[in-house]
Length: 286
Image (tube, rainbow, N blue to C red; front, side, top):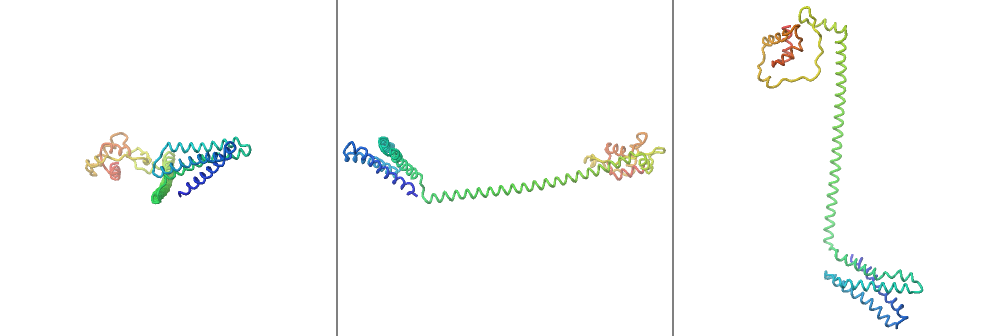
């Protein structure tokens, strides 16, 4: 893994040093003796290489010196400046020389990347531990997602079942209400009809001589239950006492009260008796 960053940096450094030395010798060789130009080129490359070596030594010790780094970049910019100046004064292939003028700066940048890689490099044991932690986190996330999807599907199924059951109940209630409404309408029509009303009246018992009882519709609606306290506190009435109370309530007005009116006043007075006994007492006294 270390070779992936150090080899490009070494190759770029070698190319930039050879190129800088060649350019200095060719460019200054026309104005000064070539040994002098060679010394100048070696000086630039030597300073660049010396500062780089010292930086690498400090990096190996876990240290860093800004002054050395500044000197190294100065040599890099100097080499790049020499290449740019040569490209601008060259009579032939000026574009080609200018295109390679960035090589010293690129080599310095590659060494910077390699130093950053070294500062962040981890041992194989640490990398394996990190990979294990990441894999465990991915496994937990996948299990959590699967659990959430399963819970969502279950909740959706439950809501669908509840909705369908509620819809069935609503349809049954609507159908029952329609049937009851139709039956009630039929009863009301029969009660209001002249012929059917007369026929129904003829089969009912007379309440008082000369008075024909009115046929009442059955009660359809909520009933009010008696309080538990009144049922517990009041003792059960005997048939004789129940007959006396029913007769008193029935004959309290003229004409005599109907069964429904008598039953309502009987219960409003706080008396307690089952519907069967109350109706039987009504029949006995009427």
